[in-house]
Image (cartoon, rainbow, N blue to C red; front, side, top):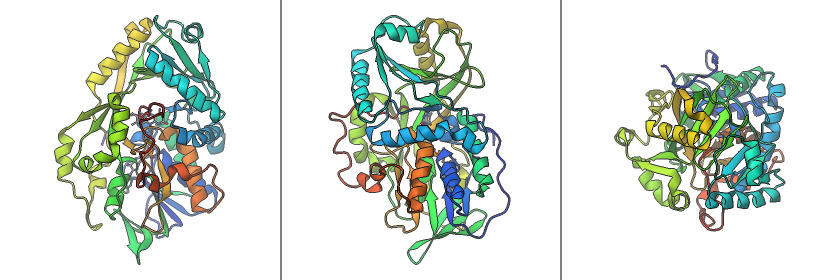
Length: 451
Ligand SMILES: Cc1cc2nc3c(=O)[nH]c(=O)nc-3n(C[C@H](O)[C@H](O)[C@H](O)COP(=O)(O)OP(=O)(O)OC[C@H]3O[C@@H](n4cnc5c(N)ncnc54)[C@H](O)[C@@H]3O)c2cc1C
């Protein structure tokens, strides 16, 4: 199957181990970095990926690695993750494309300026180095920007990496550290014996393990639902493009309320429409919608609700199945949605409106990716309630590329009963089942699914 995003090649291991200390479901950047952490700590780890390493969100994202603008609950983890990113290439002995470029957001509207001013105050509480720039300074940092800019927020410590090479390079490092990495190997179900995890059942057979980590991105909900566990995740699709011919724009990731641009290591820029994502209405969502009401009310402009052909396809999908037969994980090796032409056109228009020098810019390649969004836009990194031995690191809500080194470390700390690197309580599962949305939509700054 041809995938619409370029991804560095990674050859999975042959065969199937009988047993492991930990099995990880999912070869996105979260699963891969969790494997690396656990293997470095001396555990026997097997990672199962139904398609190719980083075939889904982890190769399709914008590549921004930032603390700026993130959910308050995530900030200690985001700062820790950034520290790990800085040392990542040396740690794995390969290139992820990470560079500390700094990131700027420019505000053209009073609403956006107020939002960034509010976030600047939040960042200060966590020691995050950001500076509010006057209109004049914003124009110096972004020469060529059209008139009307009010201010900007600049965060010199943030940066970016290259999604198409990062996770495959990390997977190679996890393998060198002792992980068995299986690609084209779907986990059909978690194996349960006597009420606790006994391993996984893959399309190649059974692997025995007392601990299983579910890092399946948008599929985590389906895998857990098969075991009667309700993990709330909404699927939200973003469209991305690589453009060539951009000149006279900032040399670092740069965003406004409606567009973002990032220079790429392979030439050109990654261009996206900001704050515009399609939330597919699926049969499963009807049940979830009440949980997302505060989130949708808070950032309704960001979401374009759509009933598409997948509604009817999903109707035909079973919600539980036997592991003896092929499952939906084998039916969809790589989720590869069609990019939205409308969003692409708008992104180009907004980019040219922001930087008139972009008039001649052209799209060389476009793709889309589906994010896994929790009701409060914060990941869950925790034990799975009621499934002894199962853990989850999922629901990254459009933030997981930057956070991933921190997620891997935090989860490894939990599994190994080490002192956690940051307070894990913001990532607990039960926040979503208790009065989880009590704080949403009031004084909190605007929540973001836009990465
Ligand atoms: C358009 C877009 C832009 C984004 N921009 C940014 C950004 O700039 N910065 C940022 O920090 N984040 C960004 N994100 C979010 C970020 O990409 C994700 O949060 C992150 O990649 C999640 O990694 P993951 O490993 O959890 O999931 P994924 O990368 O989706 O990986 C999950 C993997 O699990 C596999 N899998 C699932 N079920 C099974 C099974 N049963 N058996 C075997 N394998 C299975 C899937 O095939 C998949 O490869 C963006 C996301 C998108 C879509």
